[in-house]
Amino acid sequence: MGMDFEFILGGITVSTMVLLFVLFNSASKKEATGLVHAENNGSSMITTTAENGNQHQEISPTSDIIIVGAGVAGSALAYTLGKEGRRVHVIERDLSEPDRIVGELLQPGGYLKLIELDLQDCVGEIDAQQVFGYALYKDGKNTKLSYSLEKFDSDVSGKSFHNGRFIQRMREKASTLPNVKLEQGTVTSLLEENGIIRGVNYKTRNGQELTAKAPLTIVCDGCFSNLRRSLCNPKVDVPSHFVGLVLENCNLPYENHGHVILGDPSPILFYPISSTEIRCLVDVPAGKKLPSLGNGDMARYLKTVVAPQVPPELHASFIAAVDKGNIRSMPNRSMPASPYSTPGALLMGDAFNMRHPLTGGGMTVALSDIVLLRNLLRPLHDLHDANALCKYLESFYTLRKPMASTINTLAGALYKVFCASPDPASKELRQACFDYLSLGGVFSDGPISLLSGLNPRPLSLVLHFFAVAIYGVGRLLIPFPSPKRMWIGARIISGASAIIFPIIRAEGIRQMFFPATVPAYYRTPPSNLHD
Image (cartoon, rainbow, N blue to C red; front, top):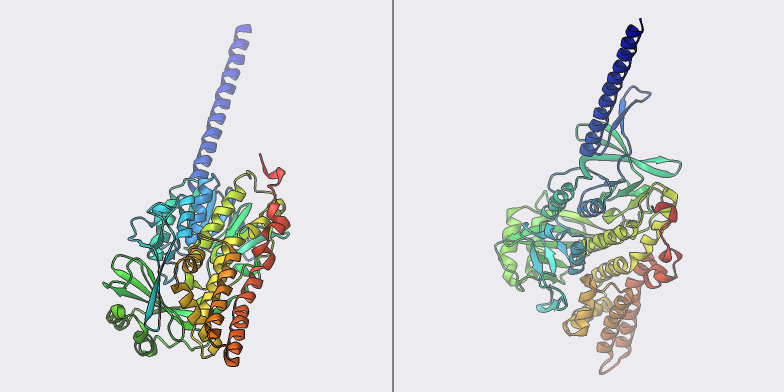
């Protein structure tokens, strides 16, 4: 009887151990499967049913950061933050190669930021061209303005390329990181809970409605952003339109230089985008009706108004490009950065801040912002305290000002000066600008270093701008300062002030010139977001 009891007890013990082993092994497999699922997809699904019966799937918050948009800013940001170890979920409306007529020229200052982000190889294998400066044309005369690149490696220069090829290379590089998930989908709204952005609602390419959550959502959905209205005060101005063509198999008068023609009514641009293609952008000011592409008015306008102003070396290729018919237009937008302080969300790129694309500074500003944001986020290991993070990131808006405001102000001011006008004072200021830059030396090196993003000093910009105006006045008054010339001279100074001061006011005088007086400038990382 005792022996039977021992057998029974032993059997129960062994059975229990076997059962526990099976249960433990099953749970381990489920956990491992779950880990693989999370690694492969960056998320897991929770299905909920709305009152109307539609099923809505919510992705549990396994991402640190959601990025809306995978253009230049979004792709570069995804790679940068992914490389920092963040789990990044990028949602882009269309992952096919973009086809745009802007975002094709990266200034040397922007290329240095690209190197800093370890993305310089993205301009490789896309037939990108080096750009060493500009040629400026006016009334049959021209002058060459070169970047001051002597202290940099030979690879450092401006870069020009097809915008879509550059973006695809950055998307591919971001996708190589295991903690970056790139998904095609349309973000329909930000997910807000008690004044804090917790993520986004979006539709996948097959129409499935999903919600993705993360402690920080960064909106980079470009100049046509449908989300910016809830994150900033969008005062969008449209000063002009660009009409774009591609000239094939011809050579620019100055090799590896952008060409700016101070035409009538406004500037005409030429720059290489591959070894066989030259981009032409014809500016049409807002006050002038944009000729129709459909009924042939645009082709006639380009042939009769623009073609006679094109350098002779490019004339035949320009006419051939018009005849080929692949003419496109787009509005040029300008919008100062006026963000709302929103816990859980941040705006970047053209969704956040735009300037006239005349100077090609947009990508330089975006990449500079990304370097700054990376450095601010680097000491933070926990992003979940949205209010503390929001207060800390207020410093971003001040610290970005030297670079951003210099490029923004220069773009807006140069565009207004470069446009033709019947007003005698405006004519004199335009001519003075061309002649001042033609002087060479410090007179051209200073402005071109500002334009290139190599000298982000707002005060230097203002000094050069008024030096141009004073130079124009001096030419008028020497040798005989007649009352009429004195009056025009006074109007040159007042006209220059009317151009630059409203732009500076929109950028923020204190943030632009005295950033160290803004309390947020000294903001340190919150201790509760550290390890």
